[in-house]
Image (cartoon, rainbow, N blue to C red):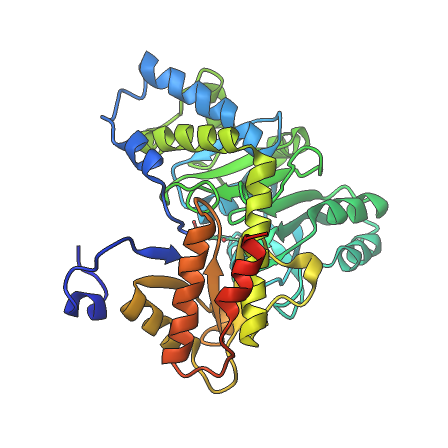
Length: 396
Ligand SMILES: *Cc1c(COP(=O)(O)O)cnc(C)c1O
């Protein structure tokens, strides 16, 4: 395989690549091996057993008893599916500018001819439950049909408080659907589709679920399913009804991504073996150690509110006059370490450390060592000692 120029110049890079972007994440060997299996007849009995198993098992990951649709698509497809199945042209949708991904979902909604109200944000805070409730209270006619929130804003490392948003919507006594993007939080950050009263949860395979890109999900409530009966946006490939019929027997209406489903079967087993509470605690711990390193370096995390610090990734502000991308290039070329780039408004100004998915203490220490060395090589003003500070947390 052709590698980045710097690495190719040095010949074969020995050892493992450190893929520390916040998705796609490192795919564990167990999952790679589970997918290394002949593709089977997707209308046969062997597939049926697999289909039934993953369609049932994935519900536990969303913490739901309700149906979860699995698409052979990237997360963006599942964003579209959530909207076209539940809404009609011209419907009002309330969204929050938490960062780049919220902005992309908004653009997608506008292209579908939805009327989006976008609550502005500074890309350093999550969706504000009170602000949302204020807009809903003003909407006496109930013309707002959906509230759409990104749970974990991957461009900023800020996690919004979905339970508080649900509570605020209930207080406002507004019937809008609640739709949540959990593409970079599912299976990394506690998320409860049923208990939090979410109507459509959108997710993807290549982040917390530890799979390659190519699958995405809609977990749907009874209320969302009801809304789909009268929703008028055109849809065909994404139609929930087409899926739910065959899904009941473990089948799909068109060719599913069979090999990714083998991988999903293994991912669910791994998450259940570790236990979701343990998985969430592990992510919290690695996030805390990462922030300790950032603090010791004298750098600043982009997230402003400690209650909204993301357990899945940390976005770090570059000191003025220094390019995050030049620094990331050094990390890649010298240490075979991929860090997340700044997206949209914060392009070049932040870099992101992904600490989600199949990840452990020493992988984090390797990552932070690479960051600290690359900071020195790039002559980014900082104090040494970030790695030590992270160790102090991890050895507790
Ligand atoms: C990665 C990501 C997306 C986009 O998913 P794709 O699989 O690239 O289409 C959307 N939202 C969030 C929060 C993400 O992290």
